[in-house]
Amino acid sequence: MLRHDRLPARLTQLLAGLCLYGISMAMMVQANLGLDPWDVLHQGLAPRLGLSFGWTVNLVGLVVLALWLPLRQRPGLGTVLNIMVIGTVTDLALAVIPAPEGYVPRFALLGFGIVLNGIAGGAYIGAGLGPGPRDGLMTGFCRRTGLPVKAVRTAIELAVLAIGWLLGGTVGLGTVLYAVSIGWVVHYALPAFAFDKARPQPQPASA
Image 1: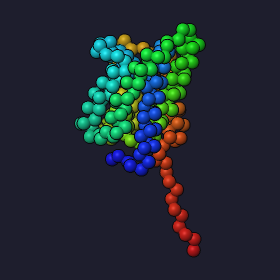
Image 2: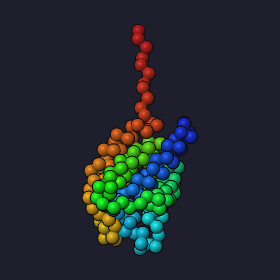
Image 3: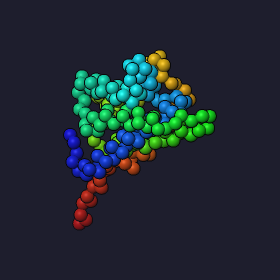
Image 4: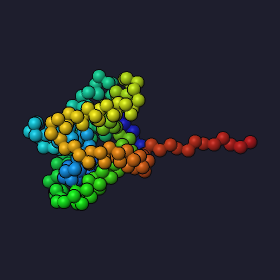
């Protein structure tokens, strides 16, 4: 159910987070050192579908959203905007962010991309207007199967990574760096952006 408290601020944070997420994805693509599992899939699919990288991101998001139906997941405004905005911004960013030469600038671009990705993820998740389609797929499977998040998330990520690699997506050191660092970045970024922080409970009056 859409929350109306502080909606303009939530929506602004959501859109800013989604746009920055798209920019961070373009940075990691241009670094050409390996992508996160879902982007390996997007990169592998794009030439086979005859679509740009960003439009492939949007299309895969729409397909994943369709998988919510048997899982009885309900999308929010953030879910819909996630599908529409991230891939579109990624294409725009890819058109203006140059692919650097040499390992030092490539690693720098990758590192900044991973950090920005985590911060942007914390921002759009913290807005509390609905999960991304890929996150919702994970939580839906967890709820329907009773399996722990770590098991479901790992299974999905490994399956997506394997398919993307077989299709020609870029797997490399960047894939490993993303896997070991993104959780930490989001862990510290999310509390800073969360609108639904726990509110202090009223204390009983003293006698």
